[in-house]
Length: 238
Ligand SMILES: Nc1ncnc2c1ncn2[C@@H]1O[C@H](COP(=O)(O)OP(=O)(O)OP(=O)(O)O)[C@@H](O)[C@H]1O
Image (tube, rainbow, N blue to C red; front, side):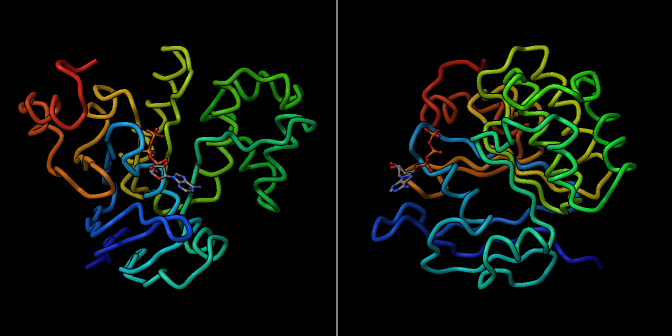
């Protein structure tokens, strides 16, 4: 039996003396799509950053493919198969799209670049444009492509659709769905667009003040508007 890609047990974490996350436990199976929802400031970004090794962990364990990665730093976690696309789009403004891809991919070479272009044809059209000349959506595609081509087994996406036009959001979500459908990539998505997140995910975790207030199948959540109203503060999905 293959090991569960991501298992989190009794995780607590925060910043310096500030505890933000408490008693967080969940597991995501291979090819699973988990949406992490919650109102502003409830700990969603902190959760992804903690999994990526970028905040202080006070206790609990993180397993990637059965291996305890809790003691590893963020670079070692990335090498172990954890891909993290943070909210801030990390691209080099003074390099072209193609140079950004080469830097991100280290020595993977031309085939990987072509793969990125096949995934995001807009990047091919813009390959000679500087990072500073890209739209928000193109920057998101570039930063996402670089992470994906590192072949992570678990991909953490922090609000990848923020500030993007609907057509670009659809393009990105289609790529994420294709990646998870292959069964080789497990995706955790933090997203403010609740309907988009529920449509994408098979399971949902809702955080409230750093704790899991609700978890279950996304289809179940869709049938519980009172939970959505109480924990996410919206009467209807949007
Ligand atoms: N660097 C930091 N130092 C101290 N506290 C922080 C830091 N970053 C976030 N926090 C606090 O941790 C809590 C959770 O923040 P976090 O960004 O994880 O929430 P979030 O659910 O992602 O919010 P949003 O939806 O607004 O992005 C908040 O109270 C926030 O003020």
